[in-house]
Image (cartoon, rainbow over all chains, first blue to last red):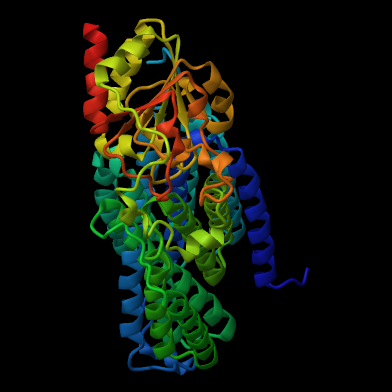
Length: 117
Length: 464
């Protein structure tokens, strides 16, 4: 199938948006705050992108013999910059993931039926 | 690079994570399934992080693990120790982290791709969109959190020139984005980041305190779109899926909040609503005389009633009166009085705010009812106790076509035999609108701090 990546991603995006639309309308209004907290937590999925920015190897200037580098002198510094920036993003997302899921759990544990302990 | 974890296996594990996230959200359709749903979502996250750590290009595990550990060290105490009355600001703070992370990812991708000369036009478009949405989310959420925490005044920014300024900012942002895509240079990229940061501020600044439920939901939505943008940038379907889910969720919440205020989303975003409310403090609250009642009278009436409906509002949250309310609930229930709580969708500072506070105070969720469910019951109620709410019980929304809140769905408290309104003063509510309920025959004000008054009611019931 000769379809571009962008097209496939767009299809996924639209379909996921529709799934979200129908699922979220089913959420009871009483749980709208936990809904926000749990969506906070799962939007921490940006951590995947952050890890992919922070994690890959630092390639030395030697690679510039193989491919055109716009900034051969600065490239190592730039990759280290990306690593630092990426790690910061990992930390921020992790705050959301740990904080978001825990605060959701804390809130949900308080919702009790009459007589439930 | 194939081995056990080929990229197909990884993609399928990503799909599994996405399904778990959808099931997690689905669980929130009822309190009894919600905790399981949260566990599903946690497992989904663990799968997603596990998969990316096995990515063949991954080498800097020390850095990544350090980042995760820092996040855990900050996030866990934050979630366990923050008092629930501070929840709206915490949620806004969480949105800001995602916004900033998305902007950082865009910056980091720019550094990596530019270093290796692999940047092209399409990547640049995705990068600049991710950075811009991320920065708007970031500064907007920081300001919203500041307003909710009271560090920044909750008063809307009413400067008339703000629409022109915002239009100019949008124009400049688009121009810089196009410049970046055409030249792939770092100067326009930095300009986009800065302009988007300023715009996040100027978008939230004009929106006043009680419109915060819309702002918080809107930023929730933006944080989703920011995540989706990073997904496009790194060609990660899972991020695109989650971004769309969260974006849709926030958008629906914004819509529900706007509908509950009978305002258009545009009018809330343009802001300025409630800017004049403070100046009308001493206006007469209508033609009739406003009666006042003592705490003892109210306690006596409630103790003798068969059916009582309690309408909590932001005033209950501010006074942290929910535990006193629980004691009142226990005493009344113990006497055989049927007590129900009536929640307006925009009561409080974020969607579902009141429900969480009542749940925190151990009030069972089956006596907490939403507007449509509870409205037919007001005419059967002997006593309605309104605690720190005003506009949401204003009959003018149904009877006065000229009123700014006309058409807004309200709790029909006035249909009860007797209404007591616990208020700090005679001042009108957030919308600055007179409330004819206060001068009705069957209504009396009980002036005072919500917590003190409710504790007084509890005392009155114990001794009466």
